[in-house]
Image (tube, rainbow over all chains, first blue to last red; front, side):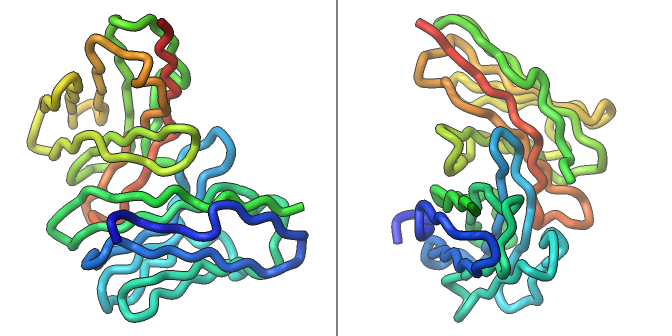
Length: 114
Length: 112
């Protein structure tokens, strides 16, 4: 596609429910990142996928968080048993390959846990 | 954890004035990038400066990098109301060059 696409743009859920957030990177981009941004804060790194390499999961805050990237393209971030502190904007970004550093961001998913 | 800290946290200027934002970081870097964010959603890449560069220009943007002080500055000249946004620095650290670590951001307000 023309840009990084994230869905849904907004998600309201109840505490304890599971949620799935989707990211469609730019076609041909081999690297994909998930970040989390709490209100008025900077971006917190969650996970990074590069091609077929094992993902860098060092930023995932707990085992309730997981992510997959199927076929080297679409990625899904899953949060199980959501808590109120999970409320944030979840941003996805993609990058062409290792030789380029510039990230292209989607518009994010605003997650609200009630 | 945050690698970069931007200063100031918030900046309010009038249209036509210059805006300067600073970023400090903690570890050795491969490159430093600046991004802009409107309305708390997606970020847009502005400019990248490599660790062996000291200054870079792009339109009304000027970025400097001082690796000895582990700091960078972003200067926006002749600011416009449309420049109102949050600005973030992001570092690609040596050893983990593929992972970009973002700072806390500067909220810039440009008034008419």
